[in-house]
Amino acid sequence: MRFMVIVKATKGSEAGELPDQKLLAEMGKYNEELAKAGVMLAGEGLQPSSKGARVRFSGSKRTVIDGPFAETKELVAGFWLIQAKSKEEAIEWVKRAPNPSPGQESELEIRQVFEAEDFGAEFTPELREQEERIRAQVAEKK
Image (tube, rainbow, N blue to C red; front, side, top):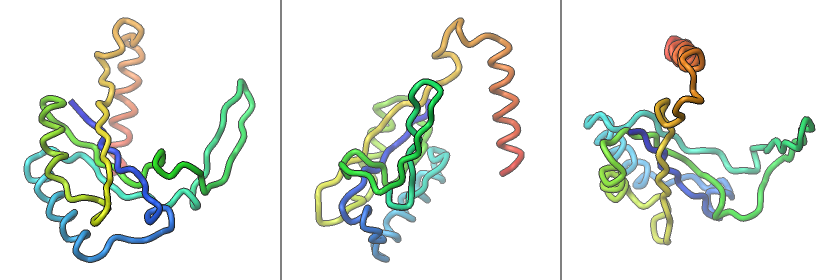
């Protein structure tokens, strides 16, 4: 099972404050531990929403909204993509993570990623084949 671990934004991350050397070292150690255990698939920090944009869909109309965005607590500041045997195992790994906002309360959200089998009969053999082709193309570019 794959899980997306979402690091929630803070006023500091939205202001463009970067982590200090101590936190970078702690995160590096944690990431190394995840990688050595074969759990980590990806992990990155994100630039503040002031450098981002949203595209709103309304029927066939597309509207671009430039950041920054309100409601900091609803924004994502970074993520890990991990692989675990269960949600419980994912939770145990996440509990070992350094606090992404030292000295203050912060929250990491864990969400399971859909797998092909989750879509049932609607995900036809042709669509599965297309998905596999796309994954292979993406893997080639790495």
